[in-house]
Image: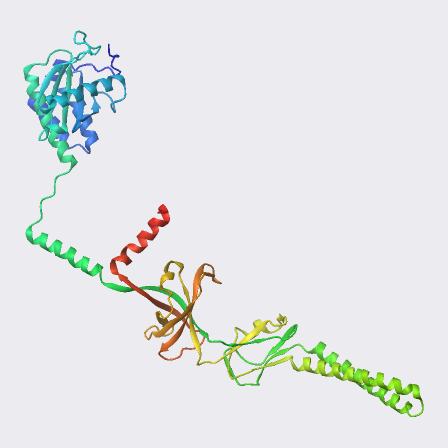
Length: 451
């Protein structure tokens, strides 16, 4: 015997209540409710529950078919059908068997029995009537279960309900779009062809990068010993000539050292003269004269060294150019060590464009690539340049982030002022337009999926 059905007990509606209104009025009301249903799920629940207003049946099942696959999607009195219960599996097997025989392609009736033909199953509603959907009977239908054999008048009502809910369900699944008119179809295909041709047009791959005009091989003016900057004699970006004093380092200690060296030199000269006078009368004094001469030469060397260091406290321009530094107040009073850069001397006619190219567009950084720079102070007139070198690895920017450091030399246009900023457009190798449209989505997809 099959296990008892685990469905909520459903009491058939009283015949008196079912006949309180005419069959036609009830049918019209059900059709209106079906058409007004919000979605397929609400339509299924209306079919298996509201249809009992016209029929004295125990259960109504919504059957869905797709080829040989049969599913029970809804049942009377329950939110969803538990297809994995013993009863659900048994009923699904029963329906699949009849579907393979072709019984479910048209309206049919039968009695539920157990696996043994002589035994009735333990299910009170054994009389089954199947009403296929319209217009496609193979899409499914409604299965009505009665405790007794249904009347002939009920058969016509069940067939009508199958047609109504089948038509509404087909409409809910979507109406096929009408075919386009020949003129619209030709216009559509023509547009697609034009877009395809445009997509294969090759254009250079470009990227935008912040750019700055910098000096080409400037001379770095640095301190030759540890000290403190006392005074700056020029203003930022001022023109200087070779030999002009630029920076004064603190010279108090060095000037005192020079004074001491000169005093030591005077003392050594006195000792040498005294030793020379005694050498005429004393043979021992001749030996002391040699020592006095050596001490005098050492004092001269110390005096010259102190004087040379004092002279180096004033840093002078080695050549003509522009003195490049940020601000006088930032340098004045700053301690510097030996070899530390203080400012730069650059020729205003020798400049480069320094670019910070984004990491995602490093493929455009090839030697000889065309570069156009748009200055912030003159965005109308671009500068033409040619890429000469680029770093092989990304560098950290002062404002944060990373980028490829590249330099370009000007080929056309007036020489801009050193320090001018703007945006540069770098032209790489050519690729179809369609590649630009899919490059960014493809990159994001690969980064997310790792493929």
